[in-house]
Image (tube, rainbow, N blue to C red):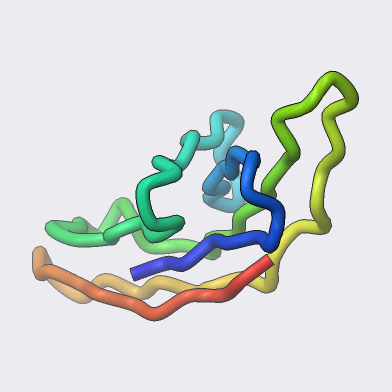
Length: 83
């Protein structure tokens, strides 16, 4: 599991995979992103970045990275970094 959290209650967070152009918007339910049923193509360096949902959008610093290595087609559950 990759955890991306902030202290501010009204935020959105994106999950980035290094080398990819698109980022994935994370659900605000728990601030967790479950990396399950992964394949070798999902390996890489992940990070997240959050922003405030106000008139003036402010961005957090990018989180520390989490390196995911997939060997075969397995399920992986990783504890991640916080912003």
